[in-house]
Image (cartoon, rainbow over all chains, first blue to last red; front, side):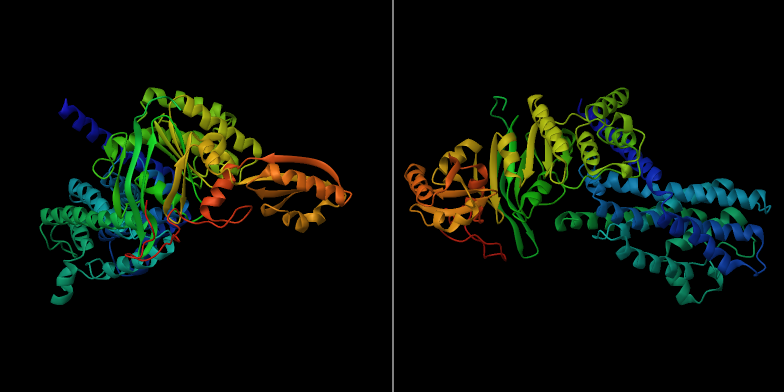
Length: 260
Length: 339
């Protein structure tokens, strides 16, 4: 009987994750702020740094996918949570019968699902129109999935800052994302980096996502060769995604003390 | 009220500091199952802070809360399933239609799939929003959003409903509809925790009221018992012609009048002994060749009680605490008297 209650509770919590996600997808995916930071930013950044550099379609796809999952997934949390706090709708979620972790997983899934969808469109355009080829499709799918959740959890850290003003969160969130972009082997391959820069790169989750995209799209022996074991990349993304949820939980607990 | 003496809410030593500011000061109270419990207080008294702690939105600095037998600090989940919350600002999703708002909340509160649509329709019809079910809430008036917000709070038929200032800013028709709904929900067995600064609303709706001031509960009782306890706040109300408004000062100077307040075209004279004041008023009218349009004696209203307790103006004498000491909010270690 007790086991049944536990299972029932688990089922309820999982259903709540999806309920929160679907609601946010309906409301926020077409918000101008989300379109700007989540959809247009990665493409602008990609074209700014990649055109006229003699890059092939396949290599371009590996880079675009890494940038897309990074920017798009991390855009949702910093935008949605402070906005909902300001509108009072976040209280509705906090008072609802679900754990804080469930709510945070729901919010994480919002960015992750958007990132997966945008990545799929980018990939389809690359393959169908530009004739790009994919070396390891299953690795690509796993990388996009794990990378999207990991980066969305990273964005959630900023969304968890106790504030009701999305503007307070946007600046530090963007600064971190841009900073990571330049030290993660996206524009300069890891192998060409100075040892200090390389050490810094290993602290960035984007490094593992880019390396994984290189594995999945280019395969070994390509110009921008992957450096790490793909299983290490996957494990790093999974571990970092889980770790990123911890500060969010702590900051939400602090918000509950402060009254946000 | 519905007979039983089970407590739905029990708050013990509940305290909230914001930094050094003491917002709620070690309060204790119980809400009985099936009653409408009014939580009254002036702005900034600690009403909303208390309600946010009871609804798990805010963590108390000290004390603990038991709701429906569950310690809120240990296991809030079963409590959350049984409670509904209508905050001061209608927090509906303006980008969603009325229907989608209700269906989302129904899913959030695990209303069985087969009953969601039926319940949503029932509520939309009851709240006069059925015709607007496919309209986004951003196009709703304030009253419509308020009704939708309440419908969302009761979609799962909660046993305990928190309402924070449910009627201010609404037209008379919407406010009356919401008051009727509160009565109806209570008749059906829902315990209501009503936070308000509208005294007359509390007087009409509540089985018991608590008056909170400066973060402390000054008194808890039924409205009628509170009024009886403040019999000294009685008054004589008189309308004189011609030019009755010009006679405020001499009327206030009559023996036994503690305060005079202009109430439209009338003067209300507060006194502990209306029977001694009435002949004086008549004598004054005769001496000034004034016609007495109306003359009546009034017992203390809940508003009088509230103002007396909270030390506010209008027709009351100066407020003192039970111990005759001033209450205060302040830094840790500088608390005023406690209950």
